[in-house]
Length: 304
Length: 81
Image 1 (cartoon, helix red, strand yellow):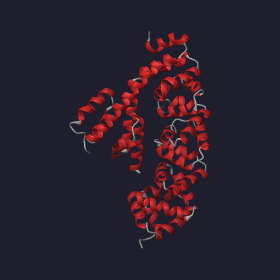
Image 2 (cartoon, one colour):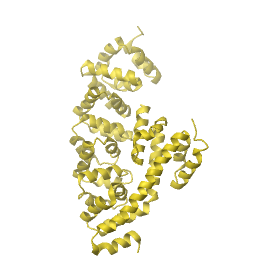
Image 3 (cartoon, helix red, strand yellow):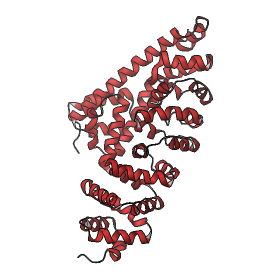
Image 4 (cartoon, chains in turn yellow, green):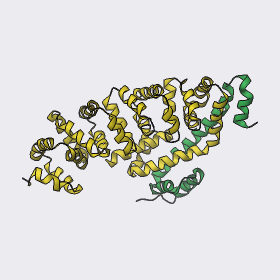
């Protein structure tokens, strides 16, 4: 999964620097965690270059009515500066101003906002304003920005956003870009069963299994097993496409996770398919590599 | 790991000092190949310039967008005069 994560980090770094992701494709050779740490430090340093300017602009919000400040943000500051200034504002005042911003500018501003620097502002944002920005970002397919806010959104807002996004594929893309494993687990935990199943079907129909496997890798055993159980109840064509993707991308170790934690009856059903299928050797090699073969061997039996 | 070449190193050093990047972040740049570090440095310089331009325009533009009666306090807040 490291390649996908490294690519996601390269895209995020390119976004910060407002360049085409291809320009920074070279950073994909670095470990994702290192590129992430670099981006976080760079974000802070770029912000610090103009911190006093952002603070002075934030001070205007104390002088001017909220509606006028909102107009000023849109017409004079622009999204980049407004996004940085928002993190320096008193949270209650920032919320008042956000109520006067149109959806497109709210989304532009969200792209520029550092979720950690503005965590208190974001956490106090009313659900209707969060939804306004989120739906515009979904319309733009800006999943990277949406993922950055999963860490800091309050649970009611997160639930409302999930319900408001009709596309399970969009949820999958957002989940792929979430950086914090705990937040990803929390997000997945909020998904009702039909949405979890929807992400599997989206992966099958759209050929985006790596996104599902990246998600599964970060989940706890219970949800990993639940994913496995859902998969076991789907038509065989879905399992076939998942196995082909695992072979193409070398994701066998990740693929074992839902298998190891699914219901025993479903394990037996899958063993009957996998044990006789063309990928038995890959599964055994992956299980031996991660130490789970001792548990699987009695089910699969000796090599044919 | 291929380190930044001698030609890239001074540019990396200059950026690290200018942005006061922590050691971990600067090491990231040193660990890139020289050509890759150069691409990243160019992108960072572009972002710095864009931010400078945006902040200057915002401070100037803010004054132009407030009603005449409020310009005194706004000017004081922005420019301290």
